[in-house]
Length: 182
Image (cartoon, rainbow, N blue to C red; front, top):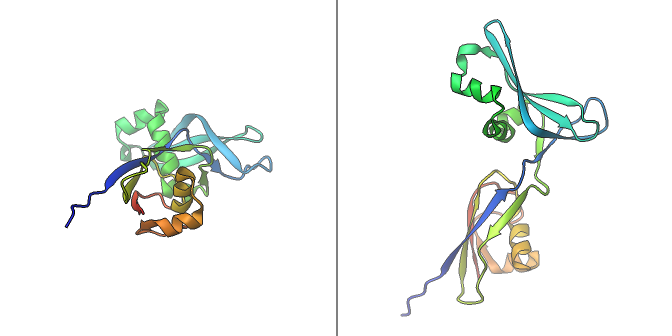
């Protein structure tokens, strides 16, 4: 009986820039907004605090607010967190954009077109089979069949035939996965 080893290759999906927001503008027909340079507005009203992420319409450049916290007690936010919002922390901009509760509450989705890249180890011609582990640095929604076909130069039909995978090939995912190429 021969010892059969296969290679495990890493692929990483990572963000190249922040995605735009799919968000209807109140002033023009545009449905896209960006975070621009990433600014927050912090407003204290007595003992209550509101924090908004400012977004800019890509059509008319009107500034709108995405609610991060709305009228919460001042003491409910740590001094460190409050200082981060006041200093326009880029980490907190990312946290706010990627928070599904904030997105749902403010009725926006993220448009990832042109905002990410795949960093992939090259697949050798031999030996087979090859296992590939795909990890996500950010929650970029991708269809596994498209990602694999694009990177390996295969048709999606060929991907369906040559790939062994435990998740649906045609359904977008943001979660790490692995597959075996045979």
